Image 1 (cartoon, rainbow, N blue to C red):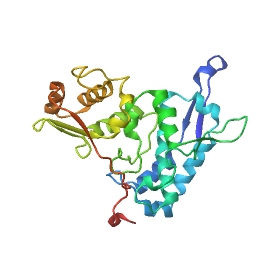
Image 2 (cartoon, rainbow, N blue to C red; image 1 turned 45 degrees about the horizontal axis):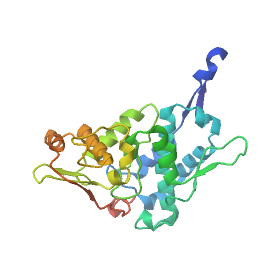
Image 3 (spheres, helix red, strand yellow; image 1 turned 90 degrees about the vertical axis):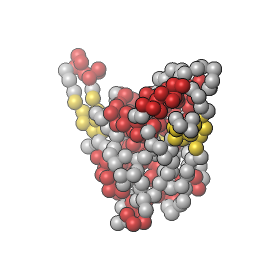
Image 4 (tube, helix red, strand yellow; image 1 turned 60 degrees about the vertical axis):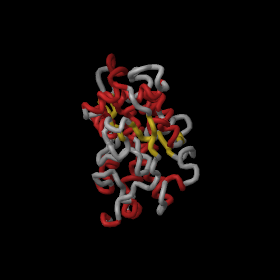
Length: 271
């Protein structure tokens, strides 16, 4: 059984049903095939995909009414894990590839099955873009989610070695957002050179930062999306000098080329 059902007296039952999804198989897969740098051992994973495949089968088999009733954190954890698992599954289906961008229709083909309606008994199919945009960002409006989604590329947020769960979700999202903001390999904020070069993620998805972040420091200097992104950095950066530099506003924002090479673990780590 992949979920636990706790029931209460009839008077409280409608408001108190709690269903907890089991992410343990996805967690086992991550621990076995993802290293501390977020790189994936695709060679070995292709030989032993059982945990991944079983997990995606469970996702496909979730009764739609349960998915609708689950609390916010449970839904977010399910959709994040499903997105990341589906990315790896798609890559394994076409492996060996040098980049996920070599796979036709990778972002827009509806090949990810999530939940089964009672009326049709046919799983709902989504594309990776639909999961990110429709099931996650538009519904939950939390920009931290972006940093939990791995795109199979070297410049994407790193895969974690543990599954996202409802109980730990807020802490997990905070940590991955802070880690990505402070990663100098993708975001260069240099007070001495007076320059800022950010990951293309902040350009592509700048509108996702509008809800939670205000203007910094002069509304007329940048587009509203850039103002929101800079406010995000002012909150998450750990270097006080960089934060002060952001508030000065004496810079232009540029964006780093995105490295779409596969986030594959080096051959030396092959098992």
